[in-house]
Image 1 (cartoon, rainbow, N blue to C red):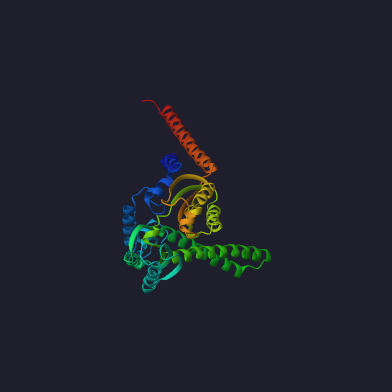
Image 2 (cartoon, rainbow, N blue to C red; image 1 turned 90 degrees about the horizontal axis):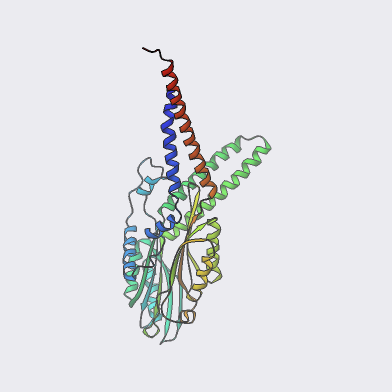
Length: 390
């Protein structure tokens, strides 16, 4: 009976915990949190000056590393996130009015190279009266703000859009999964050395191939994030006063997905089909649930088409679109340079089967609790009846 009494509070605690887990998966909550946190979703409703100021503060904070992990910390849990060095992908777009576009483009190149960076893309078009240039530079993360200051001094800044995407949690998750995969590979190699049966050898080698593919995929994702974090991206639009250009349009999507990896590939194919660029693409798995983020740029003339294509990919839970201002024909006015940004946040949909399992387990636990209480009460009654009367 004492053992039964001990199990009762445990059953109650399990039931309460499972109910709390089920209640935490309110529809749309993930995307509302992502948009309000400002890590991945652009603040579309913000005033441009306030948005640039807040993002610049985020970039400045990212430049200051946090404390090293404490001794004995495995680096896999919330404590690791508190002590790990922050990993931030910094990107920016600056529109500058100048008198001499080719000379200004050369100044941008010199600024990038003097800070240890390089020019990733540079296109100059138009004539002396109406000239345009789109220059994309990559510079080390710690001199991103220095590069921004030098670009601002080239001419008169007309618009500015700075973004900082914190990927620290993705780094911790990918590193933990990579270490686990490497340990699994080591164990399989040990088994392979001791295996004598041909069927066992074939089965172990098959599993080794799968684990090795996982290791290469995880290492590739880490390398991609390392490159994106190490070198910040700054896109500079230059134009003469008579050919003033406006800020490019942008959009943010929060999508609930049944296949996060497949839908990210679909977003990337949208960019590729329209001659656009993929700025960032990350997939994270936490407790068996996948999430992802992909950031693309497309030509302004194809922005509306790209938005429609992304809109049809999955179950859109949140969506914000900011259209560009100015010319009636964006393609004619701005050319084919991909400067219209689309950010897509994806979260794996929680299956109905999982919800049913949670409900079933809770009902079973509650039923066991009721049975235990009834049995305990019946035993107390029998004891009282069996006791000798005074």
